[in-house]
Length: 371
Ligand code: GLU
Image (tube, rainbow, N blue to C red):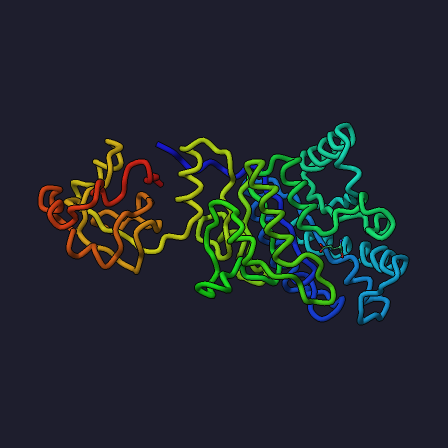
């Protein structure tokens, strides 16, 4: 049986738009809420490393600029002013939780060479071991794309993905003002799970429009590509959502989840079933519970008593026993509209109804995870 392992380490990336409203105006309530959520994760034993944007935006606010300056030195000056405000803000936010923050400013160069990269990793590990919350940002004051493109990460989405793979985080959560990846050309809704980043997925992303933001959805998708390749699951969600981190890590989060690649089949199944929001629930009878739970067999129509919610074949659904307790999740092979006709039927009764179907399992054991 697969069980959901405790979350050991996560990287949380926050965009300028989540931490501020207007230009350079800190959103104190939002920051307090995020600090409380991070503190809760830490208290449960999950190590958290934050990648925080906001230096340039806060600097602009403090210097009274309403547009991002074009001149490199002015942008660098904004970052220098804003970075210290940013760290003060984070420390103030974590103070009620008795947590100490640690500022880590990186340039791309720091992660390019193996030795330097390992020393960054070592210091991050040490900071976490000391019980602090590392707050990472790009060292914008000394790294400008205009001076040396090789020095610059370009955006914090990329930086966060590189950090997540460096510190071997299980999750990278990218919180911004975007609620997730929206399928603009199709359903117009948030794509809940991306199993593989295909050109079609990349085409769904549009650029950024705000004055202080940098990356937009395009850079988030490419960050997700990078992080998932190193086995890290990536979430893109809105930082404005209530209790967003807790909801994400209990598998009911809003936003888009990108499944890590290159995992063994069992682990992949777990990620899929656990982090995909179930589209509905299938109710099973008393006899089916031990068959699924203890005997590791597939769910057959004969064990099904009914369903709740609307789902299509291929969706992830919850599986509940007669008392309503959800004990498994899996990819269902029939749509909710077909359930009434198949519930309680034996395979012999079912076959004539679906003469062309090779498989008649409602949820195949390979697609099933016990909770
Ligand atoms: N490092 C920039 C800042 O602190 C943000 C870059 C980004 O958001 O991608 O303002």
